[in-house]
Length: 197
Image (cartoon, rainbow, N blue to C red; front, side):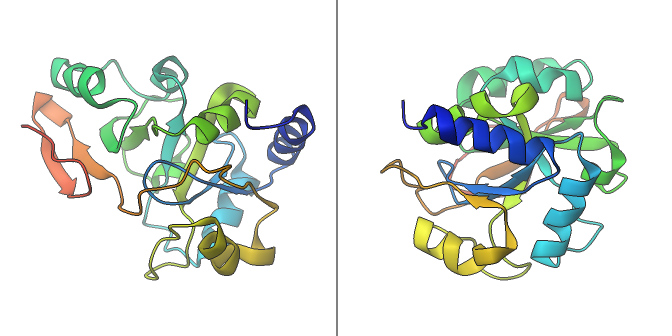
């Protein structure tokens, strides 16, 4: 176990109160707030100076936590999840009514991912509901943070908490983003993972 009970409680309390945390994943460093917290999500956009038309994605340590946020998955989505979760794949699928419009910028789809990083997975265990609305830890159009030091440099006082990586470092390349609408795979962003269509 990487996170102390004290740190887990701090994470829970901050998120419950609309806070924003920064954390390691298997790819790059991220920012996160509770999906149910419009205050926290708005703070992420403000911190990053992110355009409102760019959606956030939902990340967790378990697919069961993410399923309520999407409509029933098609066969291609299930196939990719079985093959690549946890890992560096963000899957874009039709969202359910559970997913607020302020996360998806009004789109009827949402990206879901389970990073393959033990520290991140413990953070999810401390997160109410186990799901974070996330994006990378950098100002818009600037490079993503690849290390704890870069996350501190990028986000510093702007976020409520930056959680160290306890040696479980990010590999430094973004996830591959793939849409699975109509049972067809379409690569929206080529990242570290090469997805088979």
